[in-house]
Length: 502
Image 1 (spheres, rainbow, N blue to C red):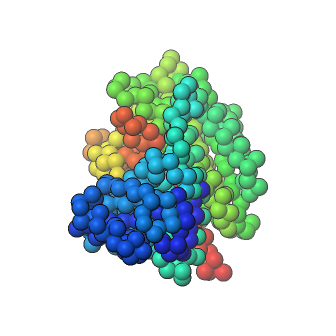
Image 2: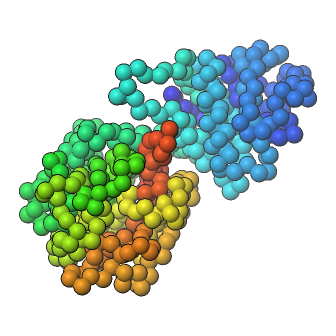
């Protein structure tokens, strides 16, 4: 679907469909009032008859309205005007796109982007509308023999901005939304891919393919021999039980100057996590293909950054492996020497993500980074703490914490900071090694971050636990593409900061 932004008058549009809002108490939006006057009160008359009350989710499609150039008018319920929230706005856009795809109209002009959401501007409204529409249109059906196609899908959707002075920001929102949505889509594709297809080697091949698409991207792949030489024993221990070997993909986006320190993103890429010897329960184990969603989000973010051609250096590390039980698998009780030289006593082989990440985070030191963010479906405790709506953010550094929280608010890809006081470090004590790989039943998300923090002393670092937000379960099971939007916004903001400093 093609998206456009314009500043137009609803009454002058000769198009397949014009979309306008109706608030509760049957009151038309400002664009609707303009069309009502032109139709000599036709819309008001319908509202008085009670055909639509304006509740969120209600729609009414009208054909051949008197004196209106558009073939159709779609009235969409917007609820109470003063109570319109971000969630309501996205619900309204989703309902609009779903309805338009059923009307047979090939193009439409939508005036719902003019709706007022508290503390949000036209940039936000346009960007969220386009990202929501892209999300709704996403399909993962390459393994289906019979694909479900929309009868006569909408081809072009134009969002209107009421003030001409806002048009430039709306066009920027369009550009950002398309790039972010592209990144979200590839992130979903990678995460939704079955684990017999999406192996560590598959991820590495996808990373290499990026170099063919973008001139500013180069990729290097580390295999087992190279990681062994680097003494990444913790990472390799997790992988040793699988017939699918580990690969670590390092994607360089070179958009800044050669002396500019890079932002480094490290994604957990467990293409399947059985739990290893500490085997998971059978229920929903199929969803453990999503344990590489952190790596998928890094991949998607790099693609979005490259499409936007941002003036910044970014390195994405996809730490890919498969955690399987076998006679070669690592065991509870093993002690591993990490790349950093620190030792870890393994108490639970299902706490494998941190054992992969710790070596990848040590490897990131060589890039002398401006900052490092790791992204991982790391702990079930994160779901207990925050549910499935908000990602957990843990960092000892106030600056990057603030920047990530700002980006999460701007992008509506929400994160929440959890504490990381020194007392939590005590829970990782081991009588036999420098640390244990789990800290007991309490504060699991925090102790996992504490573990990772021991490998990040050389730089500014933050950890995002996306265990609750990377995918949804149930009949609509699938990857969400989060936190690509948050990470891309964070990098956009970094670019703006560098521009202002120069």
